[in-house]
Amino acid sequence: EAGVVQSPRYKIIEKKQPVAFWCNPISGHNTLYWYRQNLGQGPELLIRYENEEAVDDSQLPKDRFSAERLKGVDSTLKIQPAELGDSAVYLCASSLNRLETNEQYFGPGTRLTVT
Amino acid sequence: AQSVTQLDSQVPVFEEAPVELRCNYSSSVSVYLFWYVQYPNQGLQLLLKYLSGSTLVKGINGFEAEFNKSQTSFHLRKPSVHISDTAEYFCAVSLLGFGNEKLTFGTGTRLTIIP
Image 1 (spheres, each protein chain N blue to C red):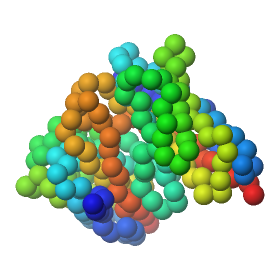
Image 2: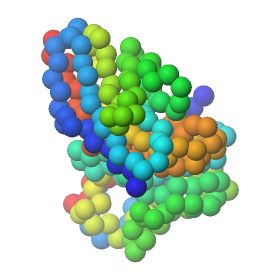
Image 3: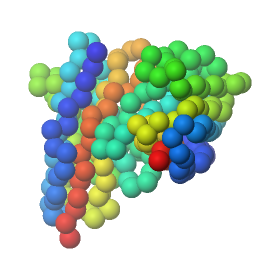
Image 4: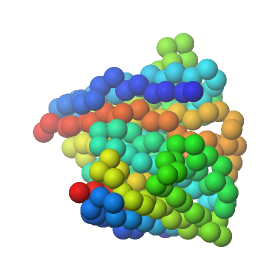
């Protein structure tokens, strides 16, 4: 079974430029998460999808960040314009929608460097 | 809101020695507890989880953790470490019984194995 796929793995951009990250979750997983991991910190949730619906986006900086999950499968996270403080690893995770557990499977992440 | 504290940011241990990585959590409601491992330039991999039942949980790679409700702790242990255990370890919690809630992570503990 393929794991969570993310691309690109690394991205270097200048500040004020736009950038987009792509995630393909594990087949059959209806819940998808985007986390941001700053250097030396644990991941923090940006947004959570149940199928196509964003059910928790309270931590997403909506002035510059946007996300979509068309057809409830792949997802794209966008930043426009990027700021120096956006440099971080962006992790995508997915899980089955079950009440008795909350096991999330993580992709390798996209390391963003804003110069 | 729930929170996680990992008291040790770095733990150096000699190869084949035992190790304990400490994790304490705070929550006003019951939680699920997790330990994830992150190898360099990779995503997070689940080591073990506590949902209910026996407070001693066994995971992959010879790790185990014990849930202590009175001390709100979930310390990770391994009786004999190997060079390949060098990685960053994250403790995490999520709300109990609310489906696929976000994970709240600690700041991580970097485990370094000394040959």
